[in-house]
Image (cartoon, rainbow over all chains, first blue to last red; front, top):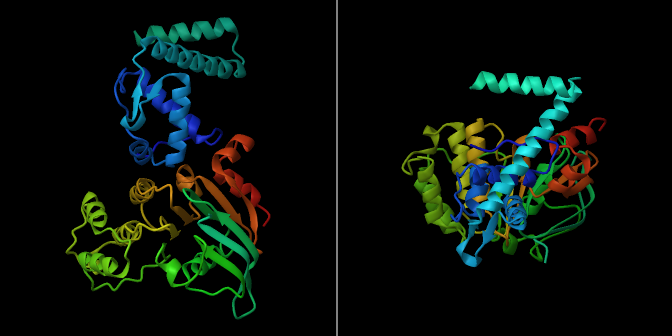
Length: 122
Length: 234
């Protein structure tokens, strides 16, 4: 199934996000090899140069490592993956709060709404 | 060296309609390029000029440094807007036909793509649905090891699943030495597979040209939105 993208941001950033999420959720395990650029490009139906750029971005973050002709691997350093997870959580929370404030909610109302939502889940 | 070079190309049809007017375009290797523009702006005409089916009135077109002719036909793989195969032919006969005709044709790749799709090579074309026929044609065109692929409306008239298969085939065929030119009006569908875009305007000139990702970054808009904006009053 082709991945869907939002219009407002470059595709490579959104591809990087999808792959980061796969590492954080353990779909791509620490130390394991990830699919090739071509495989990801075919799965996502995305330009291979765009996928390449996304992977280089994740290498810069330290989440992925290129091992020459062997391909790309997820870092074995769990702390890097944990840091990625924390940063993903922060950005999710931030976008949620921004949205809620736009709707006119106060800090207290947001906290109450979150509590109510989580209580319902458990 | 650029894969495609158009310099001062002018093309008008008999009734005096000027389609391309002093048209210039350079495309390097390793790119998937969307050739986009309103109906009747000359997209197909340009593709046919590069494929050597039409002759320009003025100007010069070169593919990998060669003027359009026998040498470029050997390295240009062209998918026309309409199917031109004889409907009584079987799929495997078409594959042999292509293998005989083009030195760069990879029969093994063609058969592997056909089997992925579950197309029976001994089926006759007339028994296939429109979408399947289009897929067969695309498979043949993409099974050549060409330097320039010209795909004129490759996803028009097929269902979304077939569209996705076609785009995924184009992506899987990616070769850093080759360039792919795609014309389409289904911009949203092709946008993620493109490196660059070329907007053609009605007066036969380039309206805008650039990298899809850079355009997104600079404008915060998708290519489709940008296209609608640019051509709103044209």
